[in-house]
Amino acid sequence: MFHLQTLELVHWDYCQRVSLPLDGSIITIAGPNGSGKTTLLDAMRTLLGLRCSAPRDYRTYARHAGAQTAWLRAVVDNRPQGRQSSSRPFARRLLYSDQVTLACRIDKNGGDWQRRYCLVEGDVSIEQLLDMPEKDLGFMGVEAWGRVLAAAGLSPAIARVLSLEQGQTDRLCEFSPRELLRLVFDVFGDQQVLDAYDQAREHQQQLAREMAQAERELDHSRAQLSELHNRVTSYKTWQMRLAERERLATEVLPVLGWWGEREQLTKQSRELRRQKAQHRAALAEQAVQNKRLLHLLDEGTRAQQQAEQLRAERDQARKQLDEATRHEAPLEKLAQREQELLALVDKGSNADELQAHLAQLQDQESALQDERSQLTQRRKLAAAQLAALEGQSLPPLPPEVLRFRKQLANAGIGHRFVAETVEVQDERWRAAIEGVLRGHRWVVLLDQANDLAEAWELGERERYRHYIVEPGSV
Image (cartoon, rainbow, N blue to C red; front, top):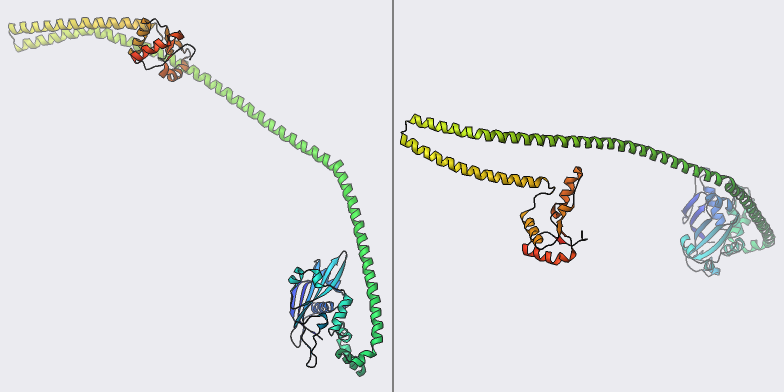
């Protein structure tokens, strides 16, 4: 008989993964009720192909885990048992290593659970088993597994002891000596005792096979029933979804579409009202700005009129001042002469000195008269120039421009300046336009295009620094 060294449970009952060492001579599992002692024993029974303690079975533990697959794995000792025996327990399976891995895989198949067993040489983990192809593992059913374990030393007597229900181990003490001896013979494999029970065991195996066949048929019927139930449920679900789809298409979607359009219209209405309010506010602001602009224009006009009036008053006052200055100048000279005479009298000057001083004063008077006549002529000339400029709207021409105009006039070339062409009548724009065109006001505009070459020559000769353009260029 082989010995279990380790036991590993994956997705068994409420345990996700548990590993338990069993390599001691005596293994004791203690704990209160419900702590999992029977769960471990049922895992060992399922791994050895035995029935669990009633009313549980391996399906109950697999369902509790909530997974699609559960694993039971044990590592057993494959060395020869006893001094007189030289064969290994699993030598018939051609396994000669010191350790052998027993594994049980429980899969959910439709609505039912199915368990399969495999035997692998050495200590192989569950992850390694998952990576190996199933054809190399050689999964087998419960009956074939039972024959493999029976050949390895798991006798019916040992299976009977392992299959005892919880709390029934004390019944072994109630057996008669003959029954206990028979049980011991069965455990240790006494051939004579086993031969006596061959017929009964064969009958029992036949019943077990029939029961297993009935269980398989029952499991198959349950699976078919579960499949039919699932199909009926799927058909009802399909009908419900079809009805729901029709309701969504005929009721919900139109209502949602109407609601969306209503929301969109509401938003558009709010936006339109907001834009109207902004438009009204903008119109009111524009009206205020227009009133303010008109007020500023009126104030500008009044300020311009006041400036013109002040300039006229200033010119009038300046004329009056000049007139008063002209009337006061002879009187000042007479007073100055009187002061000089009085100073001479005070000094007691003689007649010769007075005569000499008088001659000097007469010379000064004649010089002043000459200077006065020159100033009068210059004043008349300036007055004539001012009178000539009063009728013009252009500023006086610079000397170089005036010279170039005389040259063009002598050559008989008709022309105009930009300053003579552009006239700004609106006083509000006059300063801005004159500031922009100030650098181009003396550009020459020719009347005839064929005069351009001759005008260029005159410009180069006079070194005229402004442009000379033909008609249509500006």
